[in-house]
Image 1 (spheres, rainbow, N blue to C red):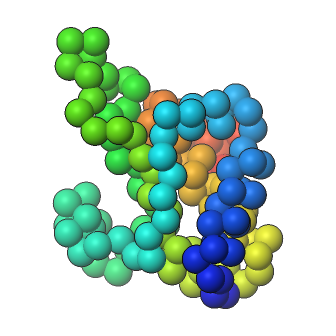
Image 2 (tube, one colour; image 1 turned 135 degrees about the vertical axis):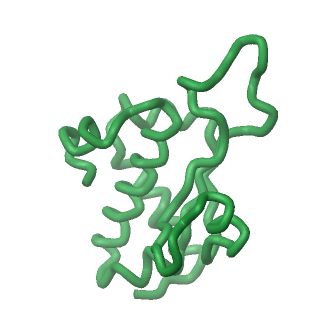
Image 3 (cartoon, rainbow, N blue to C red; image 1 turned 120 degrees about the vertical axis):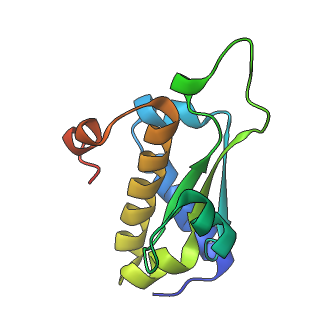
Length: 124
């Protein structure tokens, strides 16, 4: 499945709107951006094994790691990688669902929600 950047951005907006408000409220100060692919430098920096598919990433300082005396230097952001998501999806509905799952997983990294809780919420 391939979308134009404009239509992919719309799919991201639709997916974010479907996220439950209790989770979505944490996005107020988090920018969501789209890139085609993760850079080689990013993959090396996070220690991704060769051939691993990265759908999205949270960049910033997680809430549980923040300190009043040392606030984050950079703003929080979530980067969604368009090409890998398109490669694993066959329909627009499936793409929106995968984007939603990816954004929720990245929000979870930001606010400290673990994988077990994500599964309980239906985000596997």
